[in-house]
Length: 97
Image (cartoon, rainbow, N blue to C red; front, top):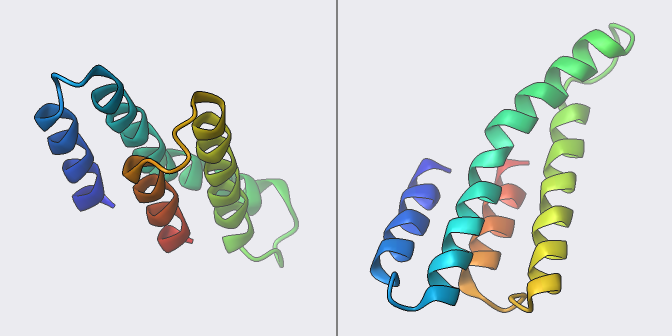
């Protein structure tokens, strides 16, 4: 996950002259790194909010699904569904689940 984050930052620096690509690589960094925060929060919700026999991975799966849906919705809205940064962000979150 950290390697994908670093690659996205390097790509955004490399493509800084092309504003659309630069901006979308930076947006992708948000979706890449979001899993570590939402995953921990979802895990706490699953452990504390439900009964003790609830699988703690449920919160992580919900967080991953939410991040993937948000990334695809943002890409669809901005017309960047086929951009490599979109697929890096979606792929790393699929891999994290």
